[in-house]
Image 1: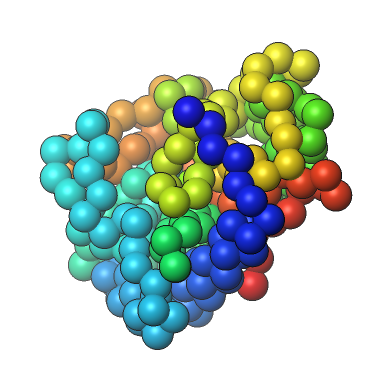
Image 2: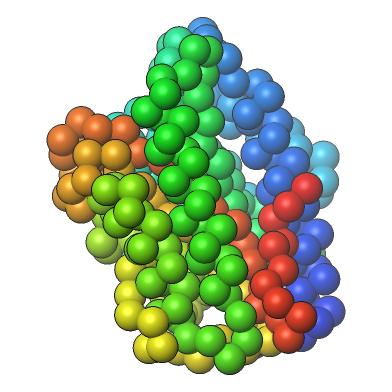
Length: 255
Ligand code: MG
Ligand code: MG
């Protein structure tokens, strides 16, 4: 069931979104050569604590997962696409890191992700980040009242296709509100003019995941969580929580 949010709820979700943005910035600021993924999690966790927010990630256990998620962020390094667990792994020069974070404040949830490089960036990684950002921007631009879900999906898929990147077909964005994952699903590929009709008060997490090798194939690590490319190519993941309004798309997870 799709829940349409009131304007008061959109305002409350904006506050949750600000906390997410701050937590992501803290994780990024903490990152550097020799810094562990656990330290990024601690940096994000202190932002949530200071804001009086809780984590929708911590303890989360969807049907596919063998264990509850143990952290407040996902950290997906290099060929990891999404859902990486922050371990004691220490970042190395040239690593490509995606950080995904959620926050729940006053009962409302925000969800966003960033991808960045550590130390000296590889030019191909900067291109991959740029393509993923353009895919997200195109998806957000299509998130207009009166349009269809397929317009968002098609916009994302077209950018990924032009960049010759693959995307894991079973994963995409989602409705979000009191829960992190609500209806409807937001596929990262689709046909324009098809699917759920978008309207004022619908809130979606839009999240392209691009794999540089061009294949859509992925595998899951033995931890049951981490998605990885099968060809060893690198991946990027950028996400915003976006409200569809009669005044146009409103990004709720900006600082
Ligand atoms: Mg997320
Ligand atoms: Mg999400």
